[in-house]
Image (tube, rainbow, N blue to C red):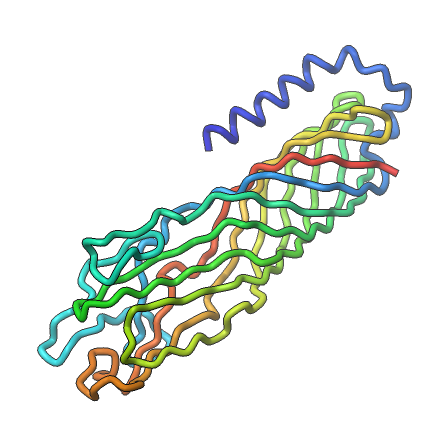
Length: 280
Protein backbone atom coordinates (compact mmCIF):
# COMPACT_ATOMS: atom_id res chain seq x y z
CA UNK A 1 0.00 0.00 0.00
CA UNK A 2 2.90 2.37 0.70
CA UNK A 3 4.15 1.85 -2.84
CA UNK A 4 0.72 2.81 -4.16
CA UNK A 5 0.68 5.99 -2.13
CA UNK A 6 4.20 6.94 -3.19
CA UNK A 7 3.44 6.34 -6.86
CA UNK A 8 0.24 8.38 -6.81
CA UNK A 9 1.92 11.18 -4.85
CA UNK A 10 4.75 11.25 -7.38
CA UNK A 11 2.31 11.53 -10.26
CA UNK A 12 0.43 14.36 -8.57
CA UNK A 13 3.75 16.12 -7.99
CA UNK A 14 4.67 15.70 -11.64
CA UNK A 15 1.37 17.27 -12.63
CA UNK A 16 1.97 20.24 -10.37
CA UNK A 17 5.48 20.81 -11.70
CA UNK A 18 4.51 20.34 -15.33
CA UNK A 19 1.39 22.50 -15.20
CA UNK A 20 3.02 25.87 -15.95
CA UNK A 21 4.80 24.40 -18.97
CA UNK A 22 1.75 23.02 -20.76
CA UNK A 23 1.37 24.67 -24.13
CA UNK A 24 -2.03 23.35 -25.15
CA UNK A 25 -4.40 26.02 -26.40
CA UNK A 26 -7.58 23.96 -25.87
CA UNK A 27 -7.56 23.27 -22.16
CA UNK A 28 -11.27 24.04 -21.88
CA UNK A 29 -11.95 20.95 -24.02
CA UNK A 30 -9.88 18.57 -21.90
CA UNK A 31 -11.84 15.85 -20.09
CA UNK A 32 -15.04 16.88 -21.83
CA UNK A 33 -16.42 14.22 -24.18
CA UNK A 34 -15.88 10.56 -25.16
CA UNK A 35 -12.55 8.76 -24.85
CA UNK A 36 -10.98 5.29 -25.09
CA UNK A 37 -8.24 3.91 -22.81
CA UNK A 38 -5.95 0.99 -22.31
CA UNK A 39 -4.50 0.14 -18.89
CA UNK A 40 -1.67 -2.03 -17.67
CA UNK A 41 -0.64 -2.62 -14.09
CA UNK A 42 -0.20 -4.85 -11.10
CA UNK A 43 -2.72 -6.70 -8.94
CA UNK A 44 -1.88 -7.14 -5.26
CA UNK A 45 -3.71 -9.83 -3.30
CA UNK A 46 -4.73 -9.36 0.33
CA UNK A 47 -3.18 -12.75 1.26
CA UNK A 48 -5.64 -13.24 4.12
CA UNK A 49 -7.06 -16.57 2.86
CA UNK A 50 -5.69 -18.92 5.51
CA UNK A 51 -7.97 -21.94 5.74
CA UNK A 52 -10.59 -24.16 4.10
CA UNK A 53 -14.11 -24.23 5.56
CA UNK A 54 -16.22 -27.39 5.90
CA UNK A 55 -19.95 -28.12 5.80
CA UNK A 56 -20.21 -31.67 7.12
CA UNK A 57 -24.01 -31.81 7.24
CA UNK A 58 -24.34 -29.98 3.89
CA UNK A 59 -26.88 -27.44 5.16
CA UNK A 60 -25.07 -24.46 3.62
CA UNK A 61 -23.29 -23.34 6.81
CA UNK A 62 -19.53 -23.76 6.55
CA UNK A 63 -18.84 -23.78 10.28
CA UNK A 64 -18.25 -27.48 10.98
CA UNK A 65 -15.25 -29.53 12.05
CA UNK A 66 -14.37 -32.78 10.24
CA UNK A 67 -14.01 -35.44 12.94
CA UNK A 68 -13.26 -39.15 12.76
CA UNK A 69 -15.13 -41.93 14.59
CA UNK A 70 -13.20 -41.16 17.78
CA UNK A 71 -14.29 -37.51 17.66
CA UNK A 72 -10.82 -36.21 16.77
CA UNK A 73 -10.51 -33.20 14.45
CA UNK A 74 -8.68 -34.64 11.42
CA UNK A 75 -7.47 -31.22 10.21
CA UNK A 76 -6.77 -29.35 13.45
CA UNK A 77 -4.88 -26.15 12.65
CA UNK A 78 -3.07 -27.62 9.64
CA UNK A 79 -3.84 -24.93 7.05
CA UNK A 80 -1.56 -22.65 5.07
CA UNK A 81 -1.67 -20.01 2.36
CA UNK A 82 -0.56 -21.18 -1.06
CA UNK A 83 -0.36 -24.61 -2.71
CA UNK A 84 0.65 -27.59 -0.58
CA UNK A 85 4.05 -29.07 -1.45
CA UNK A 86 3.14 -32.54 -0.16
CA UNK A 87 0.64 -34.54 1.90
CA UNK A 88 1.85 -33.49 5.36
CA UNK A 89 2.12 -30.11 7.13
CA UNK A 90 5.90 -30.55 7.31
CA UNK A 91 6.14 -30.17 3.53
CA UNK A 92 4.67 -26.67 3.77
CA UNK A 93 3.10 -24.56 1.06
CA UNK A 94 4.42 -22.60 -1.90
CA UNK A 95 3.74 -18.92 -1.26
CA UNK A 96 2.15 -18.31 -4.63
CA UNK A 97 -0.85 -16.28 -3.58
CA UNK A 98 0.39 -14.20 -6.41
CA UNK A 99 0.64 -10.56 -7.15
CA UNK A 100 0.67 -10.44 -10.93
CA UNK A 101 -0.03 -8.38 -14.03
CA UNK A 102 -3.40 -7.04 -15.12
CA UNK A 103 -4.68 -5.24 -18.19
CA UNK A 104 -7.93 -3.73 -19.43
CA UNK A 105 -9.63 -1.69 -22.11
CA UNK A 106 -12.29 0.93 -21.50
CA UNK A 107 -14.49 3.54 -23.04
CA UNK A 108 -15.81 6.54 -21.18
CA UNK A 109 -17.51 9.88 -21.33
CA UNK A 110 -16.67 12.96 -19.27
CA UNK A 111 -18.56 16.23 -18.91
CA UNK A 112 -17.35 19.52 -17.49
CA UNK A 113 -19.83 20.32 -14.72
CA UNK A 114 -18.07 23.63 -14.15
CA UNK A 115 -14.75 25.14 -15.18
CA UNK A 116 -12.86 22.92 -12.77
CA UNK A 117 -15.19 19.98 -11.97
CA UNK A 118 -15.59 16.91 -14.18
CA UNK A 119 -18.15 14.09 -13.92
CA UNK A 120 -18.28 10.98 -16.06
CA UNK A 121 -18.91 7.28 -16.62
CA UNK A 122 -16.54 4.54 -17.77
CA UNK A 123 -17.15 0.97 -18.94
CA UNK A 124 -14.15 -1.32 -18.49
CA UNK A 125 -13.35 -4.93 -19.42
CA UNK A 126 -10.27 -6.29 -17.65
CA UNK A 127 -8.33 -9.40 -16.67
CA UNK A 128 -5.81 -10.17 -13.94
CA UNK A 129 -3.21 -12.94 -13.83
CA UNK A 130 -3.07 -12.93 -10.01
CA UNK A 131 -4.20 -15.98 -8.00
CA UNK A 132 -5.30 -16.90 -4.48
CA UNK A 133 -4.63 -20.37 -3.03
CA UNK A 134 -5.13 -22.07 0.33
CA UNK A 135 -4.34 -25.62 1.50
CA UNK A 136 -5.31 -28.01 4.29
CA UNK A 137 -3.68 -31.21 5.57
CA UNK A 138 -5.62 -34.12 7.08
CA UNK A 139 -4.20 -36.74 9.43
CA UNK A 140 -4.71 -39.46 6.80
CA UNK A 141 -2.23 -37.96 5.64
CA UNK A 142 -3.50 -36.05 2.61
CA UNK A 143 -3.36 -32.53 1.17
CA UNK A 144 -6.22 -30.41 -0.23
CA UNK A 145 -5.65 -27.19 -2.22
CA UNK A 146 -8.22 -24.67 -3.43
CA UNK A 147 -7.28 -21.93 -5.89
CA UNK A 148 -9.04 -19.10 -7.67
CA UNK A 149 -8.24 -16.29 -10.08
CA UNK A 150 -10.10 -13.54 -11.88
CA UNK A 151 -10.81 -14.60 -15.47
CA UNK A 152 -12.52 -11.42 -16.67
CA UNK A 153 -14.41 -8.51 -15.12
CA UNK A 154 -16.86 -6.06 -16.67
CA UNK A 155 -17.22 -2.85 -14.67
CA UNK A 156 -19.27 0.33 -14.79
CA UNK A 157 -17.87 3.17 -12.72
CA UNK A 158 -18.65 6.79 -12.22
CA UNK A 159 -15.91 9.31 -11.66
CA UNK A 160 -15.80 12.79 -10.22
CA UNK A 161 -12.74 14.92 -10.56
CA UNK A 162 -11.07 18.29 -10.25
CA UNK A 163 -9.14 19.82 -13.14
CA UNK A 164 -7.21 22.96 -12.17
CA UNK A 165 -7.63 24.97 -15.35
CA UNK A 166 -7.36 21.94 -17.64
CA UNK A 167 -4.33 19.87 -18.48
CA UNK A 168 -4.62 17.55 -15.48
CA UNK A 169 -7.43 15.73 -13.71
CA UNK A 170 -7.50 14.37 -10.14
CA UNK A 171 -10.48 12.08 -9.53
CA UNK A 172 -12.26 9.45 -7.45
CA UNK A 173 -14.12 6.56 -9.05
CA UNK A 174 -16.53 3.81 -7.91
CA UNK A 175 -19.17 1.45 -9.24
CA UNK A 176 -20.43 -2.13 -9.66
CA UNK A 177 -18.44 -4.91 -11.32
CA UNK A 178 -19.45 -8.33 -12.70
CA UNK A 179 -16.67 -10.94 -12.80
CA UNK A 180 -16.03 -14.52 -13.86
CA UNK A 181 -13.85 -16.26 -11.26
CA UNK A 182 -12.13 -19.53 -12.16
CA UNK A 183 -11.43 -22.06 -9.42
CA UNK A 184 -9.16 -25.08 -9.09
CA UNK A 185 -8.98 -28.02 -6.70
CA UNK A 186 -6.35 -30.71 -6.15
CA UNK A 187 -5.80 -33.39 -3.52
CA UNK A 188 -3.64 -36.40 -2.77
CA UNK A 189 -6.71 -38.20 -1.37
CA UNK A 190 -7.36 -41.04 -3.84
CA UNK A 191 -10.15 -42.71 -1.88
CA UNK A 192 -13.01 -40.19 -1.68
CA UNK A 193 -14.75 -38.78 -4.75
CA UNK A 194 -14.67 -35.00 -5.36
CA UNK A 195 -17.02 -32.91 -7.48
CA UNK A 196 -16.52 -29.18 -8.14
CA UNK A 197 -19.77 -27.19 -8.28
CA UNK A 198 -20.31 -23.71 -9.77
CA UNK A 199 -16.78 -23.26 -11.04
CA UNK A 200 -16.28 -20.27 -13.33
CA UNK A 201 -19.56 -18.60 -12.39
CA UNK A 202 -20.15 -14.87 -12.79
CA UNK A 203 -20.44 -12.98 -9.50
CA UNK A 204 -21.22 -9.40 -8.52
CA UNK A 205 -18.88 -7.05 -6.77
CA UNK A 206 -17.77 -3.45 -6.60
CA UNK A 207 -14.76 -1.21 -7.17
CA UNK A 208 -13.54 2.07 -5.73
CA UNK A 209 -10.40 4.12 -6.06
CA UNK A 210 -8.88 7.25 -7.49
CA UNK A 211 -6.16 8.59 -9.71
CA UNK A 212 -4.84 11.33 -11.92
CA UNK A 213 -4.46 12.01 -15.64
CA UNK A 214 -2.11 14.44 -17.37
CA UNK A 215 -2.74 15.64 -20.94
CA UNK A 216 0.33 15.00 -23.08
CA UNK A 217 -1.33 16.61 -26.11
CA UNK A 218 -4.80 18.02 -26.68
CA UNK A 219 -6.02 14.46 -27.38
CA UNK A 220 -3.74 12.07 -25.48
CA UNK A 221 -3.43 11.66 -21.71
CA UNK A 222 -1.31 9.51 -19.42
CA UNK A 223 -2.75 8.40 -16.08
CA UNK A 224 -2.08 6.51 -12.88
CA UNK A 225 -4.93 4.86 -10.94
CA UNK A 226 -5.43 2.89 -7.73
CA UNK A 227 -8.45 0.57 -7.54
CA UNK A 228 -9.81 -1.71 -4.82
CA UNK A 229 -12.06 -4.58 -6.00
CA UNK A 230 -14.27 -6.91 -3.98
CA UNK A 231 -16.38 -9.78 -5.34
CA UNK A 232 -18.82 -12.02 -3.48
CA UNK A 233 -17.40 -15.46 -4.32
CA UNK A 234 -19.78 -17.73 -2.40
CA UNK A 235 -21.16 -19.99 -5.15
CA UNK A 236 -18.25 -22.40 -5.58
CA UNK A 237 -17.84 -25.58 -3.51
CA UNK A 238 -16.27 -29.02 -3.67
CA UNK A 239 -18.56 -31.93 -2.78
CA UNK A 240 -16.78 -34.83 -1.09
CA UNK A 241 -18.56 -38.19 -1.33
CA UNK A 242 -17.63 -41.82 -0.59
CA UNK A 243 -15.83 -42.99 -3.72
CA UNK A 244 -13.85 -46.09 -2.70
CA UNK A 245 -13.45 -44.92 0.91
CA UNK A 246 -14.83 -46.90 3.85
CA UNK A 247 -18.13 -45.82 5.40
CA UNK A 248 -16.15 -44.86 8.51
CA UNK A 249 -14.32 -42.13 6.55
CA UNK A 250 -14.40 -38.83 8.44
CA UNK A 251 -15.97 -36.95 5.51
CA UNK A 252 -18.97 -39.31 5.58
CA UNK A 253 -19.90 -39.56 9.26
CA UNK A 254 -22.32 -36.62 9.47
CA UNK A 255 -24.73 -37.16 6.59
CA UNK A 256 -22.82 -39.15 4.01
CA UNK A 257 -20.60 -36.41 2.64
CA UNK A 258 -18.93 -33.03 3.19
CA UNK A 259 -18.75 -29.80 1.20
CA UNK A 260 -15.70 -27.55 1.34
CA UNK A 261 -14.80 -24.09 0.06
CA UNK A 262 -12.44 -21.18 0.88
CA UNK A 263 -13.19 -19.70 4.29
CA UNK A 264 -13.30 -16.17 2.87
CA UNK A 265 -16.15 -15.69 0.44
CA UNK A 266 -14.95 -12.21 -0.57
CA UNK A 267 -12.34 -12.10 -3.32
CA UNK A 268 -10.42 -8.86 -2.72
CA UNK A 269 -7.58 -7.23 -4.61
CA UNK A 270 -5.73 -3.93 -4.91
CA UNK A 271 -4.60 -2.63 -8.29
CA UNK A 272 -2.18 0.00 -9.43
CA UNK A 273 -2.33 0.67 -13.15
CA UNK A 274 -1.11 3.13 -15.74
CA UNK A 275 -3.48 4.28 -18.46
CA UNK A 276 -3.10 5.77 -21.90
CA UNK A 277 -6.22 7.52 -23.21
CA UNK A 278 -7.34 9.17 -26.41
CA UNK A 279 -10.01 11.86 -26.19
CA UNK A 280 -12.26 12.37 -29.20
